[in-house]
Length: 57
Image (tube, rainbow, N blue to C red; front, side, top):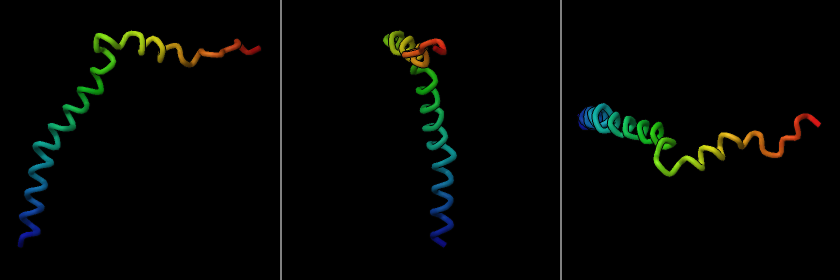
């Protein structure tokens, strides 16, 4: 019978705190590029694919 109560406890945890943790993680990852000091890192990432590009020559 304790397996059932353990399952219920873990399911309740996943439904409440687990969901909250996933939402907070998602928001941090989405908002991270928009933080005030991220402009130079964003610019470097934006132009990284063109580094050492020789225009097909």
